[in-house]
Amino acid sequence: MSGRDPFCQPRRIHRGAALTLVFAGVLIAGAATGSFPEPDSPARGAVAGPVGPAGRHEAVERAAAEAMADGKSPMEAAERAVSRSGDRWGAVYSEGEYEEFQDALDGRYTGVGLWARQEPDGRVEITRVQPGSPAADAGIRTGDRLRSVDGGGVDGRPVTEVMALLRGDAEDAPAGTTVTLGLQRGTRAWSRTLHRARLSTDSVTVRRLSDGITVLKISAFTKGSAEAAREALRAAPADGRTVLDLRGNSGGLVTEAVGTASAFLDGGLVATYDVDGDQRALHAAPGGDATRPLVVLVDGGTMSAAELLTGALQDRGRAVVIGSRTFGKGSVQMPTKLPDGSVAELTVGHYRTPSGHTVDGRGITPDLEAGSSPLRRAGTVLAGLGDPS
Image (cartoon, rainbow, N blue to C red; front, side, top):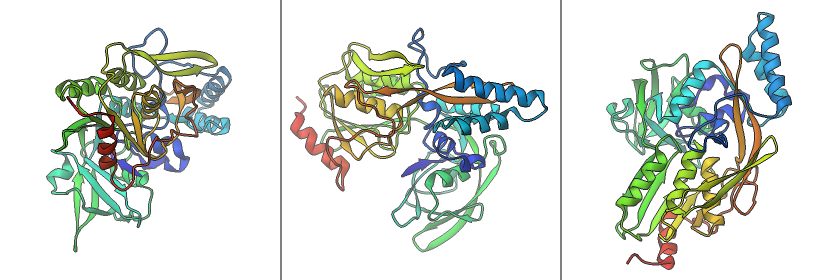
């Protein structure tokens, strides 16, 4: 499983999947990555406002209000109420955490600029160093081994927790605070103390392989990622073979995922979803490139909005999906603001692919396994789909 440092926080890792996943991906996963547009505002991103199952939301709001009246912590009371609700993806964030969350949607974060993955033997290997980041300035390279964070060994620990330690607490580890890394390159072992910084990240990257295939990698659906994907396609050869790499994409703004679907579909259904039992639908805009040979790469880190996009392209017969079963996060969360400024995210419904398949808890099964070389497998499939003119 791969992860990134930007939005992890160790303070609440013990609370389980929701917060760990929310801050574990390059930008966001878990809870509010399933934020859907309100029907009256299809162009908007994450929904703001107290929407959701009346009983569950009212119980959390009531618990917070009663705690406030008794001079206790509304946030802690809300956390207990969410825990009792049995909502797997329900979570409560402090005001500062939620502000970090909104920054994440804009592609901004506080961190050191490292991406990492856990190897089969439990070691943590750095997979990317953001140019211009504190990690890059310290001479850290892709392929270096991360041995410790602030003196604590990281071997065998879930990579989400390791990234949380790098990120630090959203309120107690702002830009300028330090984190000490234990590193290894070959036989050389050393440590470096880095200062966290405010950074921005490009969630969309594109590269051209020697055989003419365009690889469009989307690491998260942040604000502007759909337009960046469309620009990349406009710059690519017309009718060129394309790989849409969604491996490790932990979600983001659903509107951006739908906008990306619009780049590959000429209108039509992308997904259906329900909010409090009210059935709604998401559609692609007309005019997308519906003929370009396309393969989508996925893995167990493909989540939420990335699964929504994958399901649409697969069900519509637009792409061949290659890889391993996706994560299976197909629920919809919406926020409620509490009296002390904290925010509760609660599940209000689930989405389905155009063919009506439920993703939550099941994931998406690819058409083909990736094998030892996913890009090579993709190239073989694309050759069978058609060559560029």
